[in-house]
Length: 169
Image: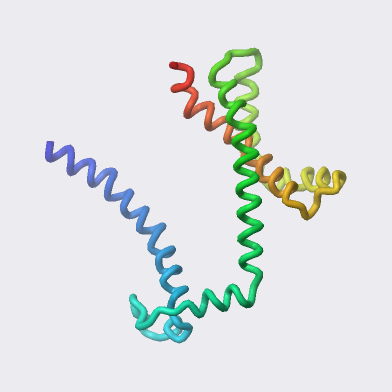
């Protein structure tokens, strides 16, 4: 029992811990640095914990840029893209996992094959379509663009991952 626990710790838990640290330490350092005074950022040697904490960097960010408007735009586009993606991919994934119909496997392979194309190849046709419909520089164009890129993978993933539980009910 003890050998199994050590094997689990060394083979799974320790590597996952290192990956988490590799991902989270730079993020934590960035957040901590945003609260440091500017003089502390260029001091040598750099101290792990700052002497004082300040909101001056955050206040300057909000005063000198349009950060709040950009954040609002990002939230609108992300919420719209996720909503549209779920609205379209959930029923499609349910149909693919629940029903057997001619061409089902061919469509599933096509959903997966679409993800093999670089996004850059798909941007130009979308740009031409959006320009013809007068949708350039609109939320709708961004939402539709994001949904276009994520929809095939979302359908494929939900069908493959959740299809086993749905089809056994």
